[in-house]
Amino acid sequence: MEQQFDYHKENLLIVDDEIEIGKIVQDLLAKLGFNTGFAGNGKNALDKLRNKDYTFLITDINIPKLNGIELIKIVKKEIPRINIIAMTGYDKDYTYMDVINAGATDFISKPFKIDEMEAKIKRILIETSTRDELARLSITDNLTGLYNQRHFYNRLKEEIERANRQKHPLSLILLDLDNFKYFNDKYGHLAGDQMLAGAGKVILSNIRDSVDTAFRYGGDEFAVILVEADSAIAQTISERLKKGFQQDSAVTASIGLATYEKGMELNELIGLADKELYSTKNNKVH
Image (tube, rainbow, N blue to C red; front, side, top):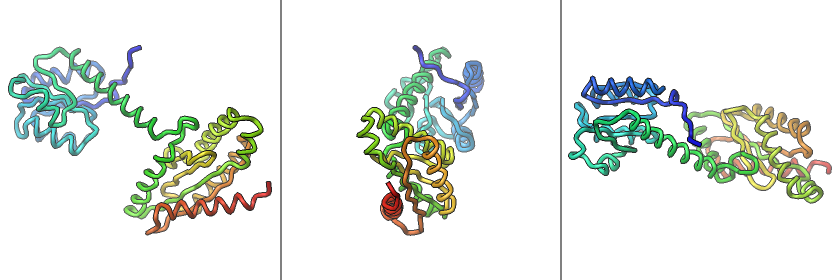
C-alpha cells in the first residue's frame, strides 16, 4: 500500500531567477496541496528561510546575489533538517555529486514535469519518515511505549543544562511498583508484562501532557522528568501518580522525588530521588 502524506504540512520555498518559470513551478506545487513561497535570488531566499519554517528548499543553481551551491551550504548549516532539491538547466556545469556534497538531498534537471518533482519530494518524505521512526524506536521501550533508559540519561542531561541556562526549576521522580516480583511469580510473566504496560499508561495519564516526560528506567522502575517544576509541583504530581496506581492498577507504587539545585551533578540528582524512593519503599507495611 502506497504511503500517503498530507502535503499541506509541507512548506516549500522555490528559488529561481527565471521568474516566470519559478512561478509556474510554485503554482503547480501549490495545486498539489503544498504550501509554497517564492524567491528570485539567493539573498532573498535566505531571508525568507530565516523568517519562516520551511521543510523544503527547491533552488536553481544559477541564481544571483548568492549562487545555489553557496545557498545550499549556508542553509544546510543553519537548518540541518531541511530537505533541499537542486534544479538547473545547466547540468553539464554541475554534477550530481557537486550538489549532494554541498548538502542537497536530490537533484533535478530542467526542463522537468511536475510529477517528476512530486515523485522526488514524496521519496524524500518517505525516507525522512522512515528515519524518524527508526530514531523513535531506538529510544522507546517496546513494552510500555515510554522512552527507554538510554534516552533518560540523555534527556536529563539536556534538561539540567537548560535549567542552568534559563534558571528554570527542574524535578525528577523515580517510581517503583510495589510487590511486582510477587505478582509476576504468582500470575506469570505474561501477566507481569501486561502489568508493566498498564503502568506506563497510568503514568502517562497522571503527568502533564507535552510537559513532563516518562521513561522505563529498568525492570519495574520508572522515571519522570518534570520540567519547570519546583518541589511543590513535583509533590502534587507524585500524589497524583500514587492515586492513579491505587485506582487503576493491581499494584501500588512507591515514589521518590528530588528537585534540582544549581551545580548538582546528574548522578547526584538521581541519587537523591533514589534515596527517597528506597526510604519510602522500606517504610511501607507489606
